[in-house]
Length: 312
Image (tube, rainbow, N blue to C red):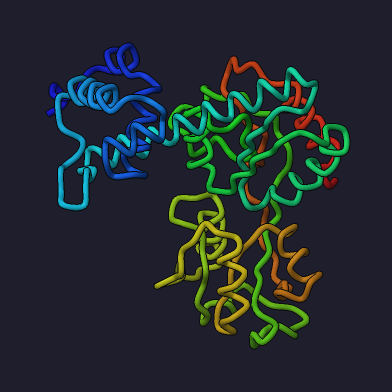
């Protein structure tokens, strides 16, 4: 089956932005005539461009149905990536304009949940110096952020490299450890307790990070060392917002989240931090870039701001 798909070199040499624009327009409009109008080419030119890309791939991308041209499974795959590529070209143009006009450019930063407070403090300072800097923030797990960094979709990631297959592929500037806290709703039976032993938490259900993620491993390590079983039938999510809402709305749930996030939630009476001790994660997080990557001035300034806003 792999032999049926052209090589990367062949695709890169023969695929054109005009063809990608046509695929997007066909998806939007459903006919060659309307798609040709949308991208300002003749219908014969649109027919030729579609034939070129289908010949390159060696398979049809659309099916003719009563309502017009409809993408098949391979066509939907091509359209999805056509939109991503075209979006990246738009961002390229915007950033070039910003540089020419002496403005801030664009910065894409990935971040794990526990580093969000640090990142927001640093960005507040950075944007005072570079008010026209456009910033994209992507919160996710370390594994996902490293994958996005590999794809060139992030300039920097604030996460851990221990989940990577090849940690040597990254440069890491260590930032901070990540103290953890157990949180519950204000209606939880232990919410008013002056002290709580870890063993008292065994009867409650948990919201946890996905399996094999550092936050989940830290919780399971603590429970194991206390002679307790790993929570059965947990709710799993990597979303901070989902975790907060789930715990807030269900008095039987507990969750482990970074202490800084827990302090924020407690400040605004969203959750209660239980008086139970958990060790920090073994591996500190850091600001990660690809080895040999040429960092933009904005990325370098962000790293400087991150170091300046560490909570000692």
